[in-house]
Length: 314
Length: 314
Image 1 (cartoon, rainbow over the protein chains, first blue to last red):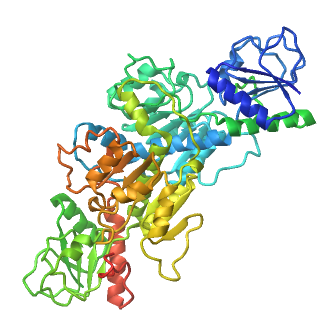
Image 2: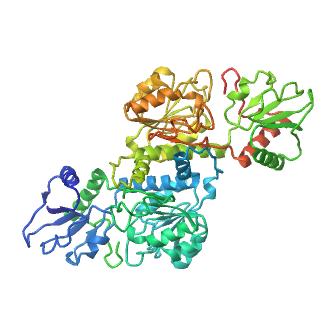
Image 3: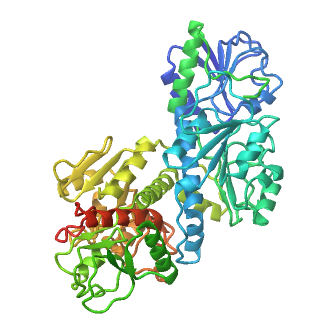
């Protein structure tokens, strides 16, 4: 098959992607440049320049190398009607589970506090609590939310997971995870939450969801971990909730502007932990295997995997 | 039964211990003071003043509330022949597994580096590796070593565990953990280790084990996590190995002198994470249940649990 490849990433990363894709998906022609109206079977893209796929003929699949596709969907020139698949990479899900486990352990066991104490050479033991005493709420329950929930359950935390809408009938349950949906259930769950982890897809419905109204439903002393998208969070309202003492700590991997500008107040905030968008990177090797699987399905006329519902936005 | 209780801890902590013990072990008489030669069935102690049990009559059990009993064994007045039991508290084992998981995740995923970057407002993404690529070696394989190993295995790390001597025949295995013993096996395992976690009991044989000769068997870039006793570590040799660039990072919960003196170089060392001896605290509630169980066994003449081999030292 003829594949159009477009990645708006660093040159070294782009070269690595192409090399791994050519190794894992042999037998296809990979192109990085094309003439207007040229014909391709599929496009494989990572954060492509808007308009880059416009007018391509014959496309039967646009496969994203990124898990979040909100920017792709904002590109009005994205060929309509062509199936769009997002990345669901097992290595990326595992990485997200690791980051979430580290953040929850750090909050529960006071390791951010001990790091601050080390700065002042202060020896002070804090009270130790059981994991069973620290309820965690995960927002978003796709492949990542499920991996994160399983990992936290194994560490002994009581885990609830919330989806905006009811899951389709037949969706497998999650042993040990309390699954919730809808706004009233969210408000009720927030009241009993100590650590909130955001893994929602970014859609018009979830933009700004981490704001003052949600924070007010959390009990005093709760913490917020945003591992999804910067636009989920209303940064000024988080600062206000931290500075008022209502929220205890925030772990933020994503921001309105990335890289986070050097003068941004989050860098120096004593109760904000800043990560440079590294909670879960796509792993080229395992992601290429996911792409290869979908290209094989396309070739054989089988059902494609990880398709995006364009109306829903994920 | 008449129980002698002695705890060299803060007054509030001592009061909490006594209250919980009286609740969980009703029907016994608990005494904090006694005359020379007074008779007791058992003594329950936490880091007692040396000599405090000297001359007590009738003792059939000394139950420690601490997991490590090396100080008790150094007390030459400890009544000879009386069974000595150490604390094996499930909540403490879980806390140790949490601390180990946090330390390994922090090292593997670069979270200590990202914390340092935040101090300089530096946005820099580091390469992400799979947990399967980070071999961990646990020194010590009692109840804590087993809990730590299970937790790290669940997170995807390849885990080896080493004991100084061969386990007694009939010791249950550990699915997924590579169990080793003896010095040649240790040296071989160290060469393939990225994160070394020390959970050994402190005995004459293990004192100073974390020193230059052991560090030289680790590959360049390995990290050391000491969660056992300060005397396991030769502090100056660790500093030398870090400063020479042979070791990458150390996470230290225990020290030669505690509290760690304000002028100690570890506080400000950029590649040392200092914890104030909080990796795993005994949980009064679950530890009291362990004490109650052993007192019940004593009353009924059953086999006592968690007995220390005084010659072996743990």
